[in-house]
Length: 126
Image (cartoon, rainbow, N blue to C red):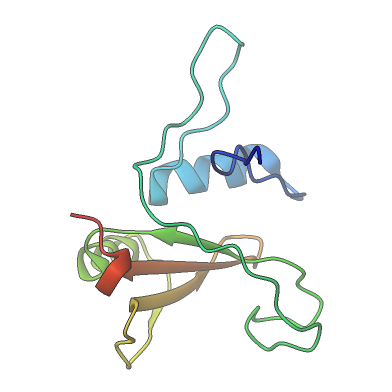
């Protein structure tokens, strides 16, 4: 059976796409789409990806009308949280450490939920 090799893109609507793209690049290191097809797109580090459907009434997405959420892997959650807070971004770190790692939640400038994940256990990337 043929299978996908990974996620090729994440596309969503924004009130101010240029400003939001710059925010993700400046604060999280997500490279913007290339200006031409001769340039390479953002390469992520290899690692685990969770693809999961949630019940329609899930409270996991911060807002009831929110239909998606993005979770970014990080090597050092504490360092990333300190960097974001230093930039004036409010970040909520989960108090509990889970078997699969540690998590923190924030919102981008348009209110979209963003979760940070420092994997542990079988998902830990060295």
